[in-house]
Length: 353
Image (cartoon, rainbow, N blue to C red; front, side, top):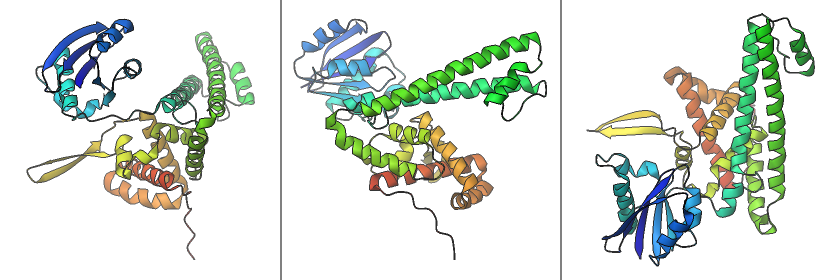
């Protein structure tokens, strides 16, 4: 079976076709806006397997080739360092290296959800893109609110209840310069628009949760159990629950808690040479949204529970607060994955006698 390596870019793809004995049979460069031409080219090579790097825009090409190929592999770009670090880097060579690695069955795979999971990620949670969009809109609202408070602070006119109905009435009447009043009115209108968007996203998430077909009843039941498990952890709200479950996907695919921490980019790097080892900072790979959710959860837990504060404070004295809270966030994620895999709910620490 032929192996085809594909170097994907925004406007074009470079393809290298390799025989089972690793001889280059063909090279081709095609425009991304010509899907019919791409299909025609690949159909000429009979039974084949193909490999694509997991770039930001791979999904359309993966779906285009999936019905044609015996196998389509999604390659983990971070682990294909031979391409990234090559001094003779070109699209032709990248495609050839991918094809050769595929022929040797040496492609490091990247995780790709099943078709329904790609659309909804987890049926009880809703679309992963919607979960991320909700976080984006929520962040925009926070940014707008901060800008409003900065302007009022210049007049010593800020107040805690600024965004309650009475606070907004006060905001409309506070005396500021003409230029600042114009900006404030614009920001208040933007905040209202964003809040309407947030309500619409929440409604769409609930609609997706109800729209899963009957065949997904079992998957929904599993996801519901995961939601219940995460929701049992103190000071974890519904937004964090949605983020954790949608970003992690199927937790059973993690063979260890350390792998889940690495997937979230919360695992520290490690370098060893000449008998000496050095611990580096966290890798920051994976989902930034998941890392943010874990950090926020860790802060709430260390501030409000003795159990987690007793873990945080010794670490903070030795390593500083920033590193300590990342370490706690990593432990929290490992705990969540363990609970989700076992189906057990969070157990609160019993008070000492």
